[in-house]
Image 1 (tube, one colour):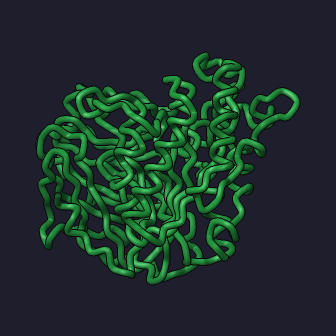
Image 2 (cartoon, one colour; image 1 turned 90 degrees about the vertical axis):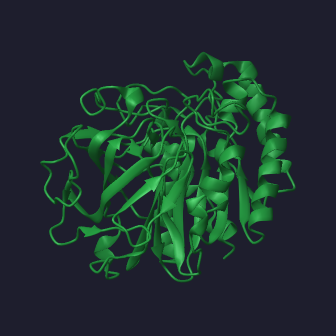
Length: 420
């Protein structure tokens, strides 16, 4: 695979990720605009059009590189007109920051179906280490030459990005917003941004919609990994980069035939460990919060899910012997209107799962999200954490809101997780 050519030197750290989960439009986006004008034929994908993906690096360096993914495509996709600049607002880029990105010295690259490619390192001359960059976002633009076929995407970005019209040719070099009339709350093709930050380590939050951020604020960056990130940087500036490898609907186990029959939750966590976690540069810590969909959606027994996680942890340690892996207990979903998650039987299985996780001997530690999130009087998600922050409304008693995610991020013991 082309991605195997990447140089994982000590200077690189993953600064942003979005786990590739399948072919558009299969997935669980939140607050998605009507995309029929951007993609008139959803299954046909992109056609001679440009993308401007808005992403927030967790750490900044003077050099960056970018991974484009076609892992769920059915034909080769040619990318050209790839640029990166500092987002001004909306789809506009700050004047003078938009610079071209190359691949093996070339301005275009063809990525075969099932493959990924990492760009050459590009100099970000304006990324001078100033504190004003913290929280700012990159605009990563690229053009799909011809027809892409099935588009590899991450559905639940909870961040607004931008698309040109089909047939609009290459527009990534343009700094104004006129070329990108359509908005989306998903990310396409782009799934990793690395920064050159010598000595830094990558911290990965791995999981399902509770990590992907369902119910959090659109463009608010208040998922629990975001909250953790701000705490980590306040305590240890530029020593760690926290990235999100959550996929809404994801399961630890199965489905076995995902490639032939993709589902909204993406490939199993075990199937994507190498691409989304172990293959990231300078992997240091993994926090794994998952099992809700296995137990609640398909009824897998808690012991089987925990054993699968045990196998996943063994795979991570075989790939990176120094990685520290932390398990997490599952927050409640009792009385959720999503019937498969809200029953007393599912809650009993969840509590059995949590007991197994708390007593497991294969983690470096366990983060007890369940205690933080559960109302001891009702057994439900605490009332304060229920109203949906993304689209409003009462919430679903399964996914916390901004307040709940802040509580989750604040519940993590930095000294325990970072070993300091």
